[in-house]
Amino acid sequence: MGNLSVALSKDGIATLTMDLDGKVNIMNEEFMMRMPEALDRLEAEVAAIRGVIITSAKGSFLAGGDLALMSRARPGMEAEIFGHFERLKGYLRRLEKLGRPVVALINGTALGGGYELCLACHHRIALDRDDAQIGLPEVDFGILPAAGGVIRLTHLLGFDKALPWLLQGRRTSLRQALAEGLVDELASTREDAEKRARAWILHNPESVQPFDKAGRTFGAHRLSTENRTSLQFAAGRVRSLAGRGNRAATRIADVAAQSLYLPWEPISRIETRGFVELLMSDEAQAKIAAFFAPKRALG
Image (cartoon, rainbow, N blue to C red):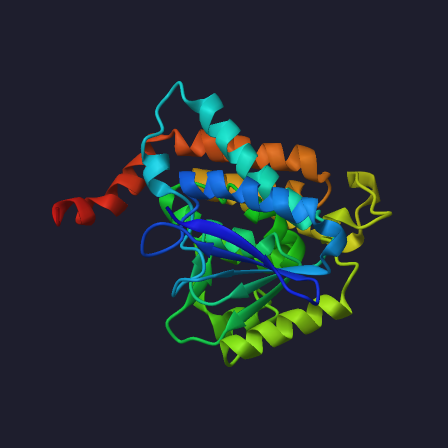
C-alpha cells in the first residue's frame, strides 16, 4: 500500500509526503485512512515542529476527489456521504489549525480536492511546470467543491475574483495561477521550492487562515461596505443562475456569498449539505458517468 509519510528534519520542519497507490494521488479511501495517522503524528510532535511542508512523491500533486466513490452514491446514502466529507473536512481543519505554518509544495497538477488541500495550507509554492494545472472543476460534474474549497477560495481571492473560478470550473497553468493569486510563489526547481518553503515557514510562525484570525467578528450587520456590495451582487447572480437551471453554480454562488458573514462551522455544514444534495441528482450522476464512459469503453 501507499503512504502519507511524515519526516521531521533537525531544523524542526516536518514534511508530509503523499505517495498513495496508483499513478496519481487521489482523495480516496486510502487517503482517508492515512491522513489521520499523519495528523496524529504531527499533533503528537507539535512542540518540536516549526512548520509543515506538504508535497507529493509522484509526478503530480493530488489529482482530486474520488469520483469513483461519488459515482456509487444512491438515494438513501445521504447521511453516509455527508459523514464521509465532514470527516475529510475535519482532517483539513486539523491541518490548518495545527498552530504551525503549513506550506503546500505543489510539484504538479492539483485539481478539485487536490487544490482544496492546497487551500487548507497557509502558503502555496508551485514548481514551475508547463504540463501542470490548478483549478476547481467540480461545477462541470454538477457538484461543488466539498472539502471547504468554496469557502477558502472566497476568503483567499475575495468574492468577485473567486466566483469565476468556482462557477466556470476553470483550470489554469501554474504561471496564470500565480498571476491571479491561486498560488503565492513559483520555484524553478524542487530544491528551490523546498528552500522557499522553509524560508516562508521561519518568517511566518504565527500563520492562520483569514477566517480564524483573532478578533474577527461575524454577522451581516458588521459587514464591510465592500462585502455588502458583494452580497448584493451575489443575490442577483444567484437569481440569474437559478433562472438558467444551473443548480450547481447556483449553490456555489450561494455558499460563497454566505461565507462572507458566517463562521466556519455553520457555513462548512451548509457547503457539505449542498454537495450531497447535488451529488444525488440525476444531472450530477449522468455527468460523472460520462466521465468514466471512455475508460470503460477501453476495457
